[in-house]
Amino acid sequence: MSRIGVFFAEGYEEIEALTVVDLARRAGIEVCMISVEEKEEVKGSHGITVRMDGKLSETDFSGLDMLVLPGGKKGTEGLESCGALMEQLDRFYEAGKPVAAICAAPSIFGHRGYLKGKRATSYPSFEEHLEGAQVTHAPAETDANVITGRGMGCSIPFALAVVEYLCGKEEADRIAESVVYTG
Image (cartoon, rainbow, N blue to C red; front, side, top):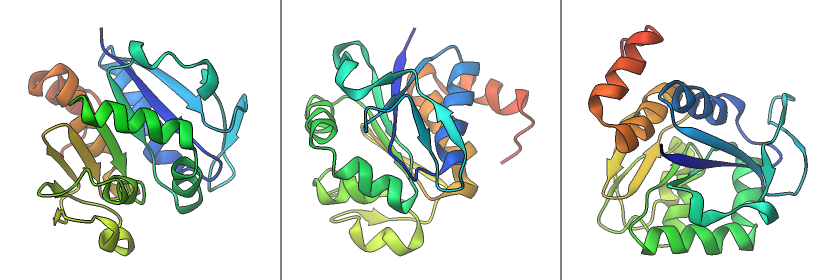
């Protein structure tokens, strides 16, 4: 069974984070919701507070198969300012392990040089941060070990791209059908 970490900083975009958690769990992927601020609960950009499964300092990254970064302007800033998370993200990317980000969070990948020569998408006002990327306006893009999503309205295609990467197209299609997503 695959295992992913979804990382939360205060001000994350709730739907982007929780859609990945929900659809991945439906696909049998073990999901760990992890606070980068060492809190048991993290409040999203619209005041929704979610209880975490763990804290960054307690996370065994060797047991994770993918790292996922939800967006939200403030949440993205919190993720990017977390040095310990950025070190792990770099290790994953450099090892060819999958990393995923949606909305504002793909800007982190641009800043870290992950997008050079790759197709990528993000929230429109963050496209200038996708340094070196072939910017698309697709709901979600998968290029090598990098998955990006455009924004909150693209949360289902983004989450399905995560599922497809780890479990295959057939499983992603099954999950889409089970939630009556017609894309």
